[in-house]
Image (cartoon, rainbow, N blue to C red; front, top):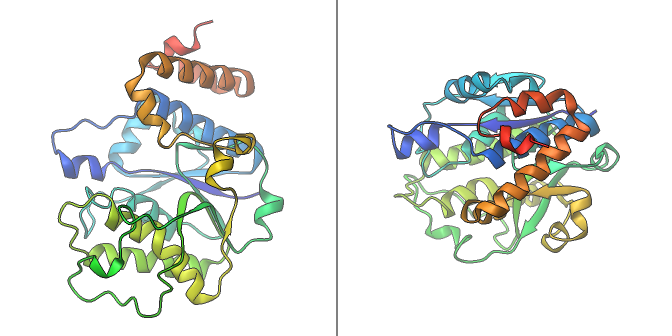
Length: 283
């Protein structure tokens, strides 16, 4: 069995607008449920790391039983959550014991992975090219004190960490510590992309190369849109389509509801009882 975790962190929302109300869109609730349930069916336990606001939200919906254990995340952090919106994952990973899998709630694993992951010290779902608009020269990133890049291979392709596997606790902690240190020292000045992906998705492969830790990619972008769907689903950019097209949104949510009703009937009634989801479970 492989232990995994999800993260629900409301701090970025409230850093942008303190009057906001925390909530999760219907299609994201359904993919989060499928992600947790399919992981438990195929691979093992999955935990949830969440702050008090997210905890209260999922508790009110009656969805906390989707996860095996619930762990706390802080709302107050020494960096700007609105710019480092994915930092909750790294805060959770630092707490989580390795070996472990870090999974985004919009990422579903449909097949057992233990035979594959047991042979790997470190894995991500895929690598990403260093597109300058997303991954600019890191020498241009501003920090309070100089961030030492001299030992890094800056040509290392970035990683997509929607699914990540960490077998070595020492390397896991080294990565988390480096990323959190960078975020605490950074001066992102409202930049909500390049600083976050440097900390999360570029530091990882550079540290792995520096430490001689082999880094595997479980798929590539082409496969994720074609044959890879047999193993993985990542809604990712597709969420923009769902937000823009109500008919496609309904089709997608109904497909999720059908899959949950068929393969996880014990949870179908629980999800169907949620007001915003009930219509998708109508026969």
